[in-house]
Length: 224
Ligand SMILES: [Zn+2]
Image 1: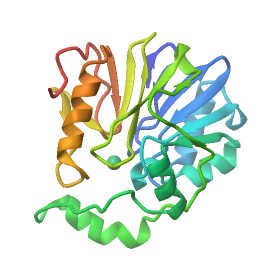
Image 2: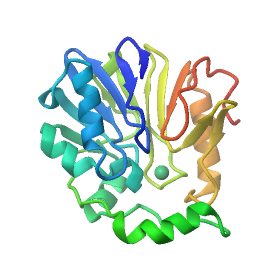
Image 3: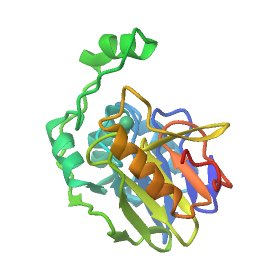
């Protein structure tokens, strides 16, 4: 699905993978659960680009639904891979960067228990460590913003020139707006609230989250 002229979201993948086509190079932000690589590559083919055009894969954090297809997608593309230091350590170990403890007898808790043994990420060595304030060349300058809370090393990416914020799971979206990281999946609530405030102050017009629809006219829809 098209978001702007050169920013897209791949449909029907958990969590949302975002595609940037910039200067003939393709960047993918987050890659979905294991075995999502074909859907992502098929979508990129539909944009008239090939697997070899994918030059960069950026991971917001190490949760399985964001890095599950990393090893397969990197192998198919040869892309350079990026994440924060803390999340890179977790991705290299094939584990989340914090303990996940879903609360209560929720459907989510039961799903985790049932699927856990079958849903493991392949350990993968990330190429490049991203720090707060780093600027990548996509979209006229894509700024790395440390947004810990959901996980300890979570990062978001903000392109001021086009007003687009890729917030991973630091916030979730629905038809009513933008909300905080989900309880039970949050490493540190206080840090999560801090990261929400930081992102609310960026002046982003479009918010692209890991779970939920893209929010346009985002001003006033932030959780803080
Ligand atoms: Zn997550």
